[in-house]
Image 1 (tube, one colour):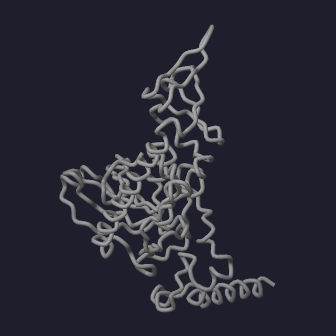
Image 2 (cartoon, rainbow, N blue to C red):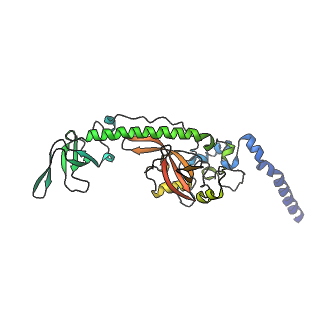
Image 3 (cartoon, rainbow, N blue to C red):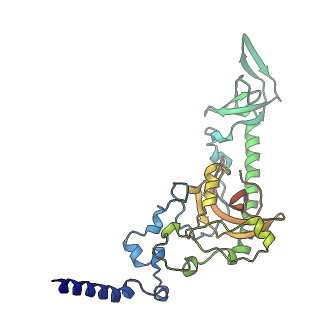
Length: 322
């Protein structure tokens, strides 16, 4: 009995040894076939539901899901399209709440209630429009902190001209930002963006390595002298789906309010830049920015040093992002 049991163990071990090469093909074989098992790509990933596309990886240290899974393919940007001001404000009957408070001047005198009587704001007085009643009237006050209120027809103020001028300048600024960003991106794209495929993957197929969205992306090689390296530190961690945990934590902490992780449509590869004489690791994102005039595709950059986001700026114009 013991002999048969020993023989069975030997056969099992030998069979497993011969099967091992078939269960774990050589790296070169996977590269030739295009099936990289440690990335979840290939037919096996398709059959299992393509885990890479589920964005269910967890941001290290934060406990929150990483948004933006598989956002490594950039859709060519188009110039922003602008609706008319009348469309945006619903023919001045549906003015967005974000358009208030806003300074405006009275064309006619306005009466308001005060303790024991009434008061008057004369024509030409600058007041603050606080809201619209949806019927063509504005609620106004002498200033933002005043408790006094008056109701005035929007046509008895210069509010339409003020908001129209703001919108015109907004369009000019957005177009300038877009053109500057596209010029910058076009100049950097060949070096900055990695092609999908083998170059976008880890350098070794460790079966125990993290897979899918939270697989680390190899840092882009860059030669920096010791002094510069001391300023910028090591490149921030970036995953193969493009997401950068440091940038996500910056957004979630409120360091930047215009950009939210769920708004991002593309993550460029981390690269080094010298901006205004300072050295940074730079992470660029494409995102949809909300404004009182609608939603517009925008590009911004996080400037990072030694594990911290120093600031966010718009790509191209380098204006600060709120």
